[in-house]
Length: 293
Image 1 (cartoon, rainbow, N blue to C red):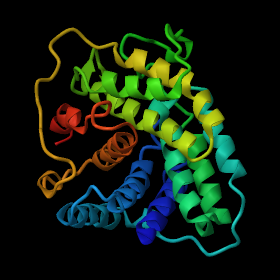
Image 2 (image 1 turned 30 degrees about the vertical axis):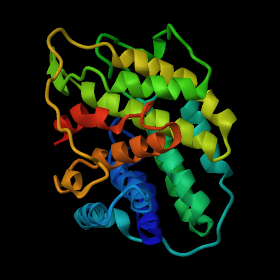
Image 3 (image 1 turned 90 degrees about the vertical axis):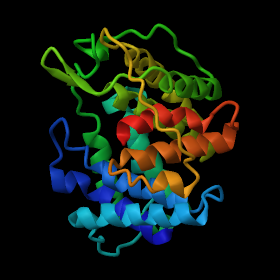
């Protein structure tokens, strides 16, 4: 597990360096490192059986082999405090940007470095801070029906973290519209709902890691995201479903190529472990995985 954590952190920290530190999508390749970190934590989850762990390991190895330049280790230097990383996570909590990726990436990194503080070296922290800066460069027309979502006024601002996280999961497992082009612009309708789940879990994880004030600072952005995600085109939602047990090898044998699959399962499993099956039923992800398949 530790070796995968180190590789995932490295890939996430190298993203801005390898893709450039500007541009609307230069943060996107951070999914490679984030997926490896998420998968590494899944490997230690006692709910995963032996076959699942073996297939997850294969998926992680495939991500690493397909993106070798991202996983080149940094030179060993002294370790540093996490203050700069926490500051960038706070900046991302303070306003919605790129579906909450700055919070998602940042919290995965924070959890990893909390477990392995020896990895918090100077180049690692600098690279992580660079990518969290980049996640704040966004397309303000990314949401359907909204020319500039930075000006969107949230109707409901819930202030209780636990109830908001539960609400985010419920809203994000309902009707899904496939990612598609409308009037010449591509929208990530289903993808945005995936990230409402991973964003909500990241805020919850911030709190359990010992940063509840920071987590609560992100609630306005999460509420805003949930409302914007409900703005969908006319027409029927997708009726596709893929009902498999995410704890079993039958699921991981599907060989999902999209790195979002690892991050989504990680987030759902973590929330399920905390809240229980009645509140976070993982089988409700069946529509998401039909579209990721």
